[in-house]
Length: 429
Figure 1 (cartoon, helix red, strand yellow):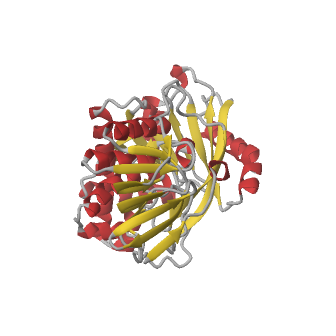
Figure 2 (cartoon, one colour):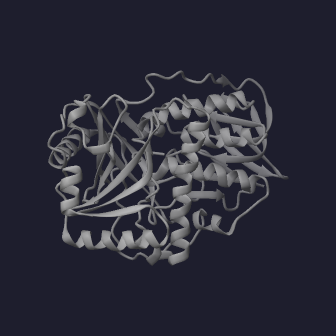
Figure 3 (cartoon, rainbow, N blue to C red):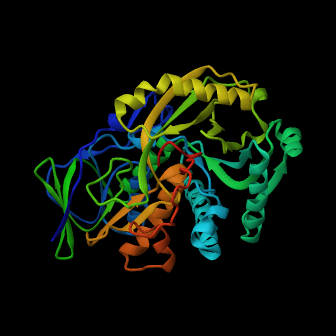
């Protein structure tokens, strides 16, 4: 028998501040656990990862229970800034150095395919989440970075990934941005992550999934079944279980590649449309600390960054005023036309991996239990990938490339390499 304790952790320990998302949405109905139940798959967590997984598995005809101890979507998902990009927190050049040419290209192509797959899902079901295709613009502010970006674009071209190198004069004339160089890429998007989550949960419910309010306190895997004990004296028995608890970490041995950090973000008041940058591209700057920006459907600018290693909630929250001031100042320097009055500000603790890749797949030593942790700036992108991968695994399939994202994978020997500069879809998955 193998078992794992799930730690108690409330939403307000993970995030704080004013949520920007979901104001036009209807929260899905979820019921308290009132009896023992049996399903094909138990999904622990009702955020974006659990919603994508539950919707996908129920669409495949499996009976599914999605369980969350608090209101679905109002944890890490509500703090996401939802920049949906296929570029990950490590460049293709870095991944090639770490894992070799073919493996690195395969990872990037699957990330691009995940954004495209998510776009297709949203469009096909007409999910009301303010989804809008975007280009992304990666900026550098020094000559050394410009050379790195030129090499990155060439590598992407050989991999068939749509990117264009922009010199300083190109950036200034086309986007009015005063930076040394940039990479313009197609295939990105933006969305309201909370509306997306609620819609996916509603779709899963209509496909006969159950959305249950309960706290799973212990998982036991024995005899080809997984049993979940809860705080309501009832149990859920399943053929398989998926841990999609976001940044509320369960009591499993975490990968050596994983670490926790915190990030901060803001949303401005609505801008005059004439003052926004061309095409409202998703902007992210490889500065230290980094900066990213996007717009919303009602014309606000969302900006964030300033990550540091603070994980204590009280210390993290105390830094909110100074971090927001730093983000405002950097935003104003990059885009002087911005009205930097702040309407919403928030912060939270999240996870990242040293190689910028998610942790997806079987939990070592816990048979029939799978993890779906889409870390870093690509949380939603990786959550879509996780749902697809776990759907295959539960049906008995496997692909060699699944090992690229395994919880117990061997990471590169970084030594004293720089920390991951998490970007874009940050804060959370």
